[in-house]
Length: 338
Length: 149
Image (cartoon, rainbow over all chains, first blue to last red; front, side, top):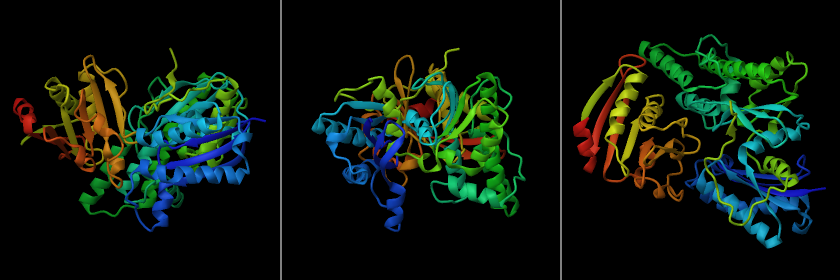
């Protein structure tokens, strides 16, 4: 049994987890800035990195206590070193290095995006070759995995990420951040009556574009305001969400047709969207030889357990780093060579 | 203060290429404008004109993306997510206005880091969905760039 303690601090969440053999979560302590804002009844004027510093030792203690594990029982320390905000990444990285040094444990560098995909193992084991749709606030990518821990990007967004478009439309509609859950709820109450463009549907690649959709929604609201018309906000939410899902579905279908895989993983924060999960489950019914493995809803957002899952892949391959490991804010997977 | 009108994305990107031709390392360009006003579109045209082949994507999530031209880096900032937290303690000082050209979207949320010499561009919607008004304001030494545009 391999027990890995893992650290994640690339964006808004500070998290430490202990995961056994990359699939059994013994603990997963997460502190989010969004919660602390809510707890104090408003925005706490703290920068992201300062928030991570305040929380890192507390979530570390919590993770060890909940798992009832002593440091001597651990085998390695996994940590997200990119992509993300440099100031935020550094806190988790320094926490992980310090813990590793103090307890004489090897350090495993983890790509945050690999972590999101590895979280599918908390549902059931990924079978290879596999395809993953990674959709979050910062990324929208179709990733081919020929084998475990091997990633090539088939297509990605050319401008805004899918989750980003949810947040920006949310801002336009004056919804709280992050807006994904609220838009999903509103969409269920509305009808997709407005026809927004699904960008690049006919282009010969696997790329996405959500900037045009954002502009179309802005234009729609703008025109309605000018004419003094009232917008049915639920219908707008449903129409927007439909357009995003259409785009994701179209590209995924094409990739599944061109690359027959044994499993398909849905990962990233936007994977929590109920309509997207439903639509992809239906699409996958047409691909009998491909198993649909969405990341469990609880682990779609940023968390350290997923870093422990991906860290285990590197652990098996003995991909360790020294204490000189640095952050890589722009870290990404390689593009598929054509 | 100068003002130009563009009819579509292509014209906005052609204008960006004109600005790029007048740019040199150390220049900071503040890109003001609401959601969908054309800030990232401008940056795409600007970078392409300087030979950037990498994909120029929205930096909203990472806050900063770096691109490489033949001669100097381009630092593409988006302070959108810093509205509530501010830009301190993130190490951004190491980039803004240093060895590359810095473009900043939502500069109002990074005010403390803006140098006195900078090119301010303000994007607003025009009469039509795709048309834009771009106001040009050279502050300090950047007044020379405004003059040449």
